[in-house]
Length: 539
Image (cartoon, rainbow, N blue to C red; front, side, top):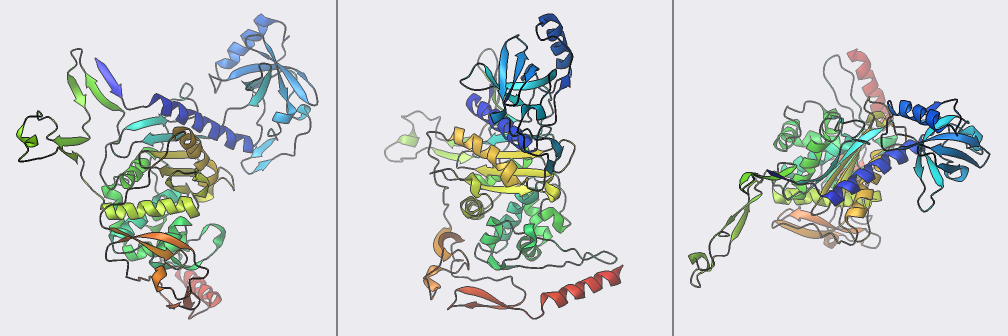
């Protein structure tokens, strides 16, 4: 029997290496937690030393890491004896990261001596320095973990998957078995539902204070943007690219929970109804595989896919026992002399996707365009790679407990999740952009090396129009075009001449200033006092 896997050996190595390096980089930012153990042994006694190493290996967190005994410590370097009884040096100049770990938000003072890091008798993990056989780098196994998955969007073939730092030491697969909050990664489906229900990328919405009544006896819910800042009137595109919470909630209130639920359900993200606004900001748990598959459906133009690891199983005679069929080809099996190729009736073979189209390709492309904009101008800008077409979205949960990034080109979708197995904060500055996105980029830089990704395919039904990025106004309608920032906007044909606004207050477009103006009927201070009073009275 022969089993044919979808995995690419090359991509699998790239993915495993990118995940490990990304987790290690995060870990080093948070300092040195100390040696594995400190033992009293003569470094020249190979039998005693190896017995100690073997005993420590039983509870080791990293079977593939090299283990060494610190034999001497000086100001600028320390010497180590390895398991093969060879000797090496760890230099202070390459160990400056090893400040004392205090907690995930706090590390100790700068290091100026190896005595602040190591003692004689310490057993530590080390990694060999490249191009130097005698020099080693101090290493520690990250407490944080994560996963990466790579999917071919047109077929659902899983090209690579790594479910953690070390499969040899922990078989829990965080790509499929870990269910964590996705944060802003879920916003994509709020905006997709908005397009399905009549909004456009240049629809104007207010990014400002918002208070939502949660019912009798409940306090008013006041969602906030990261940094507690407000941008005022912005376009749907700008709200997505900058990952604004307040404009997203306003869009969701217009679209309706029922419609957003329909979008999430048909993509198999959630099976139950979405009942609260916090879910729209990514509070409901989901697996990395599920979320990455949903992004793949957007990337492929809206076709449903089945993510799978096996393409074909054949018996010893070469007959298929199982075969994953992605497409149906009408006419492909006909002989050349058949009627299908008769000069009088030239019927070329027709290829059809075997999966149903569950998202309109127009809306899928509009969402792809917003995701590409997030990489060009928004929170995902660090994902940019020269001369490559990339779309993607960051995700960070409350208190920075989980960090996500999902991005794609035309022919591969990559999802990354990072977090602690026992949920804990990653640290106050550890966002999806800083923790998960670099892992995505490490993989992509290898996978796209010496390759050129293609522009995202524009389907029939889309009209590309030049607009001002700040106001969403078509350039041809702008009176003063001196300082505008022109971008190409994707409209459904017939929508390009419409102007839609969701702003509740009195507002107007100032042609001379080329900006949306909002007339405040009540200042923010009195509004806040009014809502605080209401909250107090509800208690």
